[in-house]
Amino acid sequence: MKKLFITLATSMAVLAACSDGFDAVISDMQSPSDVAVERLSATEIKLTWTDNATAETGYVIMARRADEPASNLKSIGEVAANVTSFTTTDLAEGYKYYIGVKAVNGKEESRVISVLFDMATYDLMGNARIDELKSGTNCIYGEYTVLNSSKVTEWGLCLSADGTPTVNDIHISGPKQADGGKVFQVIPNTLLEYGVEYNVRAYAVTADGINYSATSKASMTKEYPAITLEWTKVSTPDIPSAIEVYSTTSKLNGLAFEAWYAIADVKNSDVEFRVNVPASAQTIDDQAASFNGDCYIMVNGGYFYNEKHTGLAIVNGKAEGSINEVRGSLLTSSPEYYEMYNVTRGIFGVDAADQPRALWAGTDGDSKTKYYTTPAPCVVGENKYGKVSAKYPVEPTAWTPKFALSAGPLLLIDGKIPFDFTMLPAGEGYYLTNYEVIAYDIFGTNVSPDRTAAGCTADGKIILFICDGRTAQSGGATLLELAQIMKGLGCVDAVNFDGGGSTGMMVGDKHINKAVIENSNGSQSPYNRAVVSTMGFFKK
Image (cartoon, rainbow, N blue to C red; front, side, top):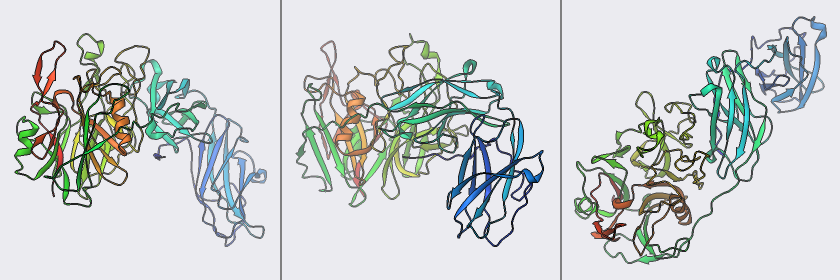
């Protein structure tokens, strides 16, 4: 499981790493250091420290009220050797305490290292209260209230598989807006594991520290299985043996289906993965031919509008474009047509070492690109998020792609499918896990056009996939089916690319999928649409 550790201002008052307020025994035993206290609730605190001793048999935790004499010092607990934390509910609200810890071994003990901590009355100023928490198929989601939100600088959800969660555990910042203090938030499955019940708390950060809600419990309820089809190897005598091409006419969930994929080990062969962005829109036939035999496999790439690529393209280390705000709906009849959302989008590519991966890309407030292993969990119709940052949605991942292309949604990451078609009460178009706000003609239970996808296996091989759609021979695939197919091919990471009339694959100089689209009125349209970006396998 990936864990995110972010240092935030906490409700601790560390005045000195010394023996203030204690009659300490001095010895050669090394004292603990970095002693700190965190308030977990009105009555519960957590003391942590760094273990510096080598001969201790345990640690003794000591405390006294600051307004009492040193003789009132007493032990409030003990822990074994090498343990570095202690939780207690023995301190009363409304008082300041000296709280310390010392190493002992029965013969000698270290200096007591203490902090002064204020157990001020724990009111609801800036506190977050969970109103409802639910278990989703591939997420946890719910609503919470941020009281006195004008005094809160950040809020969100934190979780732990065991114990009481804090911001030092797995956590994800909440939406930028909290309308009337009400917040709707999703925890994506990228931060979760199936079969695990989590303790979840809302948190709110104020100038005085961090306040937490009571603990609720939830878990994910369903992991989508792989779809395995029967594939036949295609004879490709004109391209290197490092590339293999396969086709299938296996039915997909009982419906006619035709698809192809090419697979290559770009790390251990004379083949490399590249992205191509021509000066103007061109068919994949023309783009492939322009490389004079050095292009072995080519498929169409990202989305575009007015013959301009939409999103990010990295070609030989040079990046073009950005991830911009998107409309909540492209339907002019929808109220979401007038609402803009900050999103992350799926991106697939390779670095200079030919290592492939898929991530979410976002553009921050300084127009810089950042990459993440967790999406911005944007939900249409709910609280809006700000732009990505150094800590939202999680800490960015260091990645320097040599060739990469964005589109979306991201289909697989670490073997998990991060989305499905769970709808909110608002109905069609309002999906729980359509984090990338993919348009209605691409995302939905009844949307199954031609598809293009790129993914990679655990051992670093790259798969380029297409399927036909909207013909008698092939009904296409929904995005969820596409993700399951890529999983069935052995992909651990995968991204959906532009489909429909853009979908095509060149194998050498042959365009292997259909040549026309059969329209709903019975007419036919040319299939080989000019596109503004492509990707494929090339001579290294």
